Image (cartoon, rainbow, N blue to C red):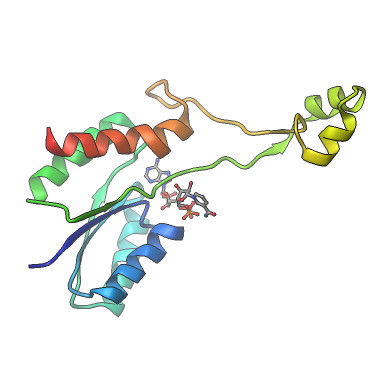
Length: 155
Ligand SMILES: NC(=O)c1ccc[n+]([C@@H]2O[C@H](COP(=O)([O-])OP(=O)(O)OC[C@H]3O[C@@H](n4cnc5c(N)ncnc54)[C@H](OP(=O)(O)O)[C@@H]3O)[C@@H](O)[C@H]2O)c1
């Protein structure tokens, strides 16, 4: 019987590399790509099947930073699969830090100027957005969306 593997964020980066590695180990897997962008997922699916034609590769659309999407996806997964053998909750975001002009100037004329330049503390800032669900985007994407996706698989 084929093992069933779910990978979130399988459309690029580590998720995509993981899918290739899993198929290199076992090309009889059923790999379910849980992706937000179906177009990208279709392209990945075609690429994986071209190199591993004996595998089964399917797609479930999910935006883990959107609760309605997560609820819909977990319901679809429950309907489509009797079981999931492995689940990789990989999808995620990490906003790039950027220079805070205000932080730079307030540090420049303070006693912590050397500390600021040696550690960048107070000089860099990282912006997080609020999602439509009213949650911090990084938290909902990296943690909470995945938590609910998995929890709802059994509801
Ligand atoms: N690379 C590193 O050095 C590193 C270090 C520590 C931790 N990590 C973590 O490892 C994971 C993968 O990193 P990576 O470097 O492979 O990142 P990546 O290349 O940016 O890929 C992230 C994947 O997550 C998907 N994704 C992002 N937001 C999503 C959402 N709301 N719903 C569904 N899918 C979403 C992206 O889909 P789209 O194609 O639709 O954008 C993409 O497939 C992330 O969680 C990251 O925070 C990475």
